[in-house]
Length: 147
Image (cartoon, rainbow, N blue to C red; front, side, top):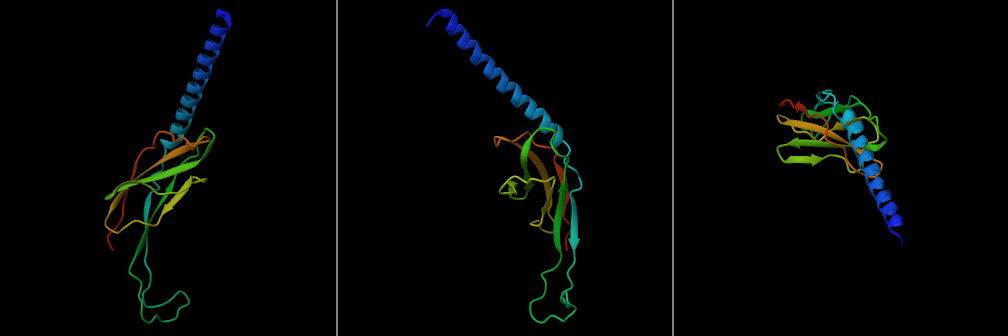
């Protein structure tokens, strides 16, 4: 193989690396543009259950409801880059935890596992077509009321 073909091959490799780097940067900017806008629609919802009657209006006997249930509703704008979904993370008393098993395909998520009297912080990451995550969104705070 001559010197010209070796230099051509090396040039192709360098160009391929540059194209991949450019694609990665575009993905990061595109998804970061989205993830930087996690809505503070992270509102703690408080659902009171009536311990004395069931949904059909009949009196309950025995097991009463444990009290109010709380949830946090999150929403965000969709990514401007092609993604397969989003991962939702929560930081709380036990540290940072990914809440979803598979990427969330929509732009909303409801966390029903929060505890009264705690404050949680949420962030999202867009998941690209190859499974790579973007930079995290802004973090939103969700204080959960005490019962």
